[in-house]
Amino acid sequence: MSSYFDELSRNLGETAIYYPKLAKIAGGVTAAIFWIHLCQRQEETAGGNDWLTLMPKEIEAETGLCLPEQELARQQLRNRGWIRERSREAALEFSLDRDRFQKSWDAFTRLVFSPNQTHPNPTVTSSPSEKSVRPESLNNSRDRENIGSDPFFPIQRQQKTTSVTPHYQFQGPWDSPEQFQQFQKALLDYAANQGFSNPGGWVFRIIDSITKGIISPYWDEFISGVPLGETQKVQQEWEVEPGVPYPAFEEERIQYYIHKGEPLEVAVAKARSELRNPTRGKDLWDGFLRKCDRVADEALRAKKLGVKSPYLPPSFSEKPPVTKASVIEKLSAVVPPKALESTPSEGEKENRKNGEIEAAIPSLEVLQKLYNSPLGKRLVERQIEEHPEWGYSIVRDRVIDLYPF
Image (tube, rainbow, N blue to C red; front, side):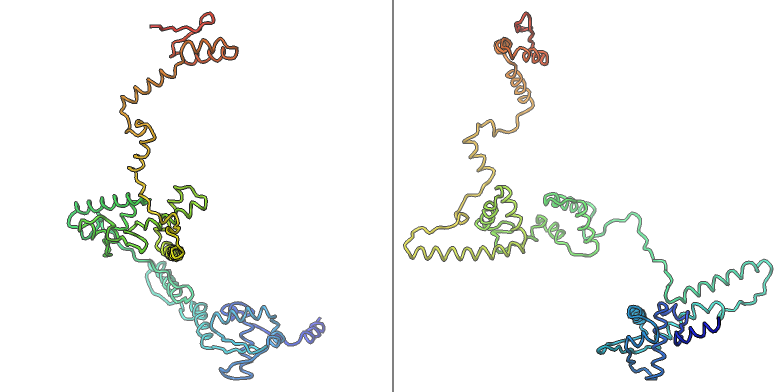
């Protein structure tokens, strides 16, 4: 048996060892083997802190680590700051930082060996009642010292909490609670008019920012008596006044969406929505100006050729604004006046309902004529059964009125 092992050892070649404790701090067995090999080669060749040049195939032949294992080991050592490396053609150059390695090793030895070597069990003379208490307290203190000295797992300290004052109230520039309430109501009305999805939440954010010292234009407008949001309006280059674009520009965008097949009301909504966007509106305005310039050049050329009224796009023709009053005025000339009247009262509704019911009751002649037809007999019988309020009945194949008076 011994001869077989000796022969096998001669065939296997030289042995390579690693240190299990080193593997714990190096990141694995491959990293420990790689580090020891670098240290040995540096001692043999450079003998100092110079760069060490090695070939990957040479490392594989001496350590048995294949290329993927070498890359893993180099990554582990780089992450710990033990080595620096650079490539030169097919070779690799390494620089070892032994100070960083020594710090990691010292931290590991303190963590592993300090309970048995640096803290011997003290001899304590005490009364019998104290013997069962003091050793436990000493062990707890040692455990706390060991946990505190661990550089990899620092102590999680409890976060400090801030106490909240009971009956908290917003403190701001308002002079009285009444003025504060008026300001809140003004903000709520403004949020409702603007169509905000959560007016209460928006008001809270505005008031909370004011209490924290942030300047709010809404408060300045409120104390000045100006409608909220008025001073924050910005008139853009393509607007006659803040929020109102030039009619020709707006009509141009409306016609654009109409030609794309959109309904008129959808085209108006899309055109106004994009003109409210400053960035989108600025780009469209630049394009509109270019178009106007081209149309003007064509009109001037046409005039020089003798055309008295050059062609202009429909958006350039002046149109009266469409308002509710103008629409009612036009419809009143077509629709009967009753269709445009205000909502009738409850009495008028009741009278109108009764009149409609009376108009809906068929006459005796109509029912009798329909009853005499081959296809209408069963229909008239069913209608009279379903509507006893008509006061009709069928007697000897005749439709009669049960309440003639």
